[in-house]
Image 1 (cartoon, rainbow, N blue to C red):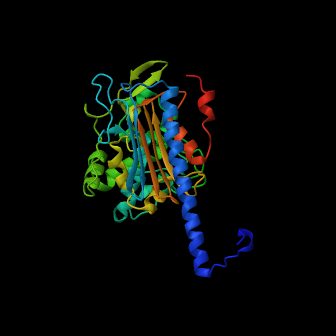
Image 2 (image 1 turned 60 degrees about the vertical axis):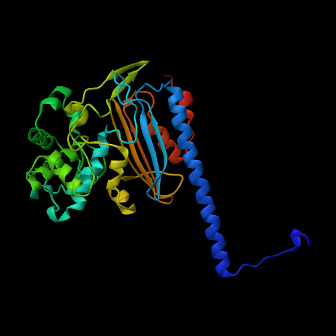
Length: 339
């Protein structure tokens, strides 16, 4: 019998099953391709920067359906002790602290019944809402743009809030989106006011109730942070300018951090929508001298990606390469960058 002479007619039920199987196979193919690209870019990153096992490094974890499917721990958490980075290493998380702050609000809405900021603390902007702060739609000038390092290292939270509110709005509250650390400074003060306690202690206790161990004071056992220029690493002290408050102050390990995302809805609530070659994608990145972090979630694959690096440089970020993988871009920038 010739193949060209046969014709198999599928029932509607069999046809749907066939499409489901075909769709599932395509999803598996896209998943494997993405994982391979992420791994390849991590390898290319190490080669481009000529990283050695005793250099500062990173942890990269991938979870599918809440199960760890890939982990890459590379380098040391401190150049002096040579202690290697592992799954239990605590890092400074930089701006990945922001979803932690937003989650405190969302998980305790009974403590935040009012919509407007001036229902909690004084604000000269009557239409400024908690949602505007969380979603970077406040119009507040980023304090890093109008205060110098010395001032930031010495200023109190109360004075910083006053300083932010003295600045003119960049746009009307809620009308545009522009990333601003200042919104999370205001949220820090609101959390202290609502719960009548120190921000760090309040957040730590709230998460301990959920069996999540977050910390806000640097310890010797945690990863140190380094800035690399050429072949030289400079250790970065954890000053207020580096850590911030609710906008960047958080110490956690990769596995502990991801516990805040208790289901697919949490990613959509706490992260920003982004571009992807694989359907819906949500992410947040963090970066200060010595820190490069990324949390990402691909809804179609139920795939979570977390990266924490304890070093940085001006030329190349591993978080950018991973985002390139997710967006379907090649790693051409690796050949263009001169290290």
